[in-house]
Length: 239
Image 1 (cartoon, rainbow, N blue to C red):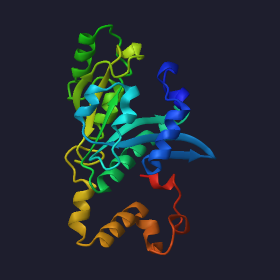
Image 2 (cartoon, rainbow, N blue to C red):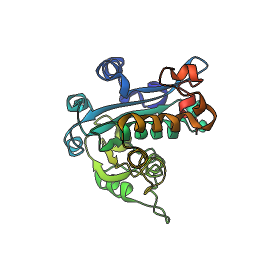
Image 3 (cartoon, one colour):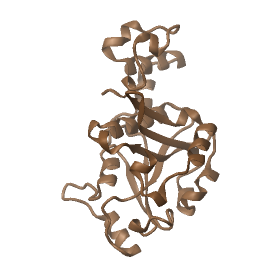
C-alpha cells in the first residue's frame, strides 16, 4: 500500500510502520477485502499541534506522547483500485470518532501534501494552499478531502518533507476540533454521549449500539464479542 500510494522517496519504511504498531497498536487500523489489506490509517498521540511546525517527517516519532491531547494522523492510504469505494472517507471518520471517544484527546491534526501543486517556489506553494473555489473549498483535492470532513487549515509547514520535490519540501498543517466527522458544525460524538447518559458504562453502551446499527443492536450483550454479534472490521466501516 505504501508503495502504491506514495512516491518512492516518500514511502515510510517497514521499520517505521512496525514501530507505530509496536508503540500503539490501537492507533493503527486496516481494511481487509478478500484477505488482502486495501486501506490503512496510522496515528500517534502528541502533546500539541504547534510542535508539528518545528520538525521534519523524520523527527515525528520523537513527538509521541502516549497521553498527549492531540492525535496526529501519520498516514491514510487506500489502494488505487479500490479508492472509488469511499474507504478513505470511512477510515477518516472512524479515526475521528475513535479519537473523540478517547479520554484526554481534544483534537486530531496532521500535515498533508498537495496532489496538484505544480509550482517551484515556497511563495507559489503558500498561494496555492490559500486558494479557494467560489464556494469556499480548497482547490487541491487532498485538502478538499479533509475540508469536507471538517478540517481547518493552519498554512504551510516548509521543510517538513525535504524529499518531496513536487511540494517544494512543504506540507499543509491541518486539524479537526471534533465539530464532527462529516459536516462542519455538527455535534461531536462526545456531545452525543454526554447528552445521552450519566454513567460511563451507559455512555459506552450507547456508542456500541450506534456502531452496531438497527439491524444488529438487538443482539448486543456485554458478554458477546462483535464477531459473535455478526460484525467484522469491514462491517464497522459501513455507512
